[in-house]
Image 1 (cartoon, rainbow, N blue to C red):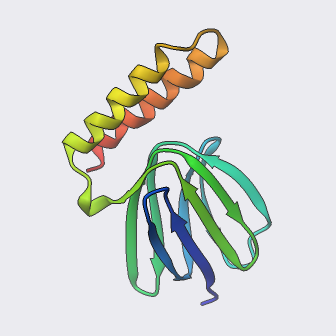
Image 2: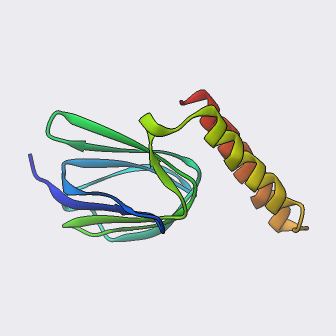
Length: 129
């Protein structure tokens, strides 16, 4: 099976750099899967679980937002925050929810819809850990 380079970094650390066969991405406009020879895409992330398949191994990461660049040979993710799913706890996710709620207090109009969607997406992470 064809592979591509996959890199996941957050401001705190590099979480992954490996050859992957597919990456399932929680895009802001909807989930999608990147594979080798994918058309170029640059998009933003929403809070969710990013899954990386490398051989028979699947790694999962909780991400809160950021950017994804997909090319035919690579997928690069620059996440606002990212942790391996195995390291995520309810306390960690509740902290993310509190941060999203605090940020929503400072917005209005159409930005409030975006902020409320972020709160909803972040709350949904509790069901995934």
